[in-house]
Length: 276
Image 1: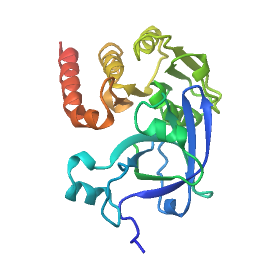
Image 2: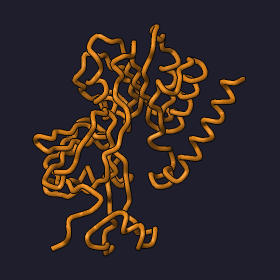
Image 3: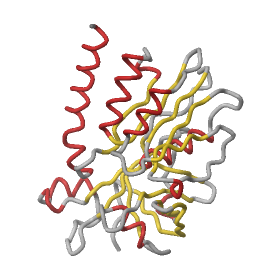
Image 4: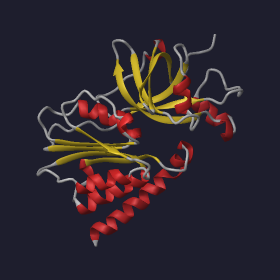
């Protein structure tokens, strides 16, 4: 009998549901999630582990061992996904996947997933939750950020103003979110990812007072909005949770390889703009 896995959680698919035109919800559970625990953040994420078919991996399976002992080209692929919900009593983890046919790794898996399928994952991580002390909140993102935005909108303090803007392809991609806060759905309608969203944020009339902002999604538009919020709106970094979840034209591995340098360049450009 194989030893207990040493660096990951093992979820078993319980059920799936297509919740919009381009999004599939997968709920996993089982004893392999006994050690899974979140810490109150609304942007908790896991790194899903997708081994290559036909490759013999070390036993007991460990991502760390694979990376230490195997050629890079057969390392298990990792894909980062936000936790939509975690029910520790039922031991059920909910993940929402953007799907576009056979494109990518995680989306096609989710579209074909059936009860009994196994999903391995690392984590969870995370670092954002709405600050109860803020005078108002700003939540902005594309489909990749929608699970975190939905969880955050549902956790906003009652009666505190908020602007919540989500860019999707069209009306068929809207989701029901259990919040009294109005959601502004920004339709892409064939435009480049984030173009309509950036324009919408620029047009916003910001309320007075201290804002706590969450801005995530495709790196190109996140860069634009970061500059707008930091330079033009004067929001300090400690009041911003902002990051590029993905980048047009590159897969997750390629984006992780350059993301640190990308962020350094963005920070340097931003500092120069603020100083000028």
